[in-house]
Length: 207
Image (tube, rainbow, N blue to C red; front, side):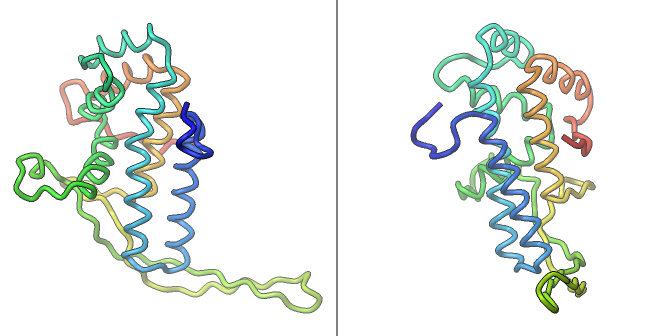
């Protein structure tokens, strides 16, 4: 797709990058990383989850794009992929939450009306165990020692709902994978679930 993005050449690569970011986040969390460093990882992953839609949309057929425009009522043109992701976020709450972080961490807008839409804060305390592995004898025997510790981890607070960042991002990643297989059907299903109600929050489905 582009020679300006190193190893990322299509939506599949981009989602692999997202998987890697989630894994990095979880490893740092389990190792007791600071809240600040975990926040950096969380921002990166949510930003990638949001922009994955542009990559996914670029890879589908013209006829499928037309049907999606009819479903979500967004305009065509040079920025069509961005319009698609924006329209989808109105019916897919998980994606909208990722947008809040992806957009507002880059653009500090405290006095703009758009900033009032922000529904995301990051603050929580959780317990985790760090595993220390040591070799004994000739190096073939290993002992794992589990040491409990308390770390602050980012969470997305959306009204009364609380979302762990890694789980939220994985839900969006799973949706994009489903979208790559069935673009129109996956969006139609989400729009149907969200019709007349709060934008849909996905379940934690395994890939």
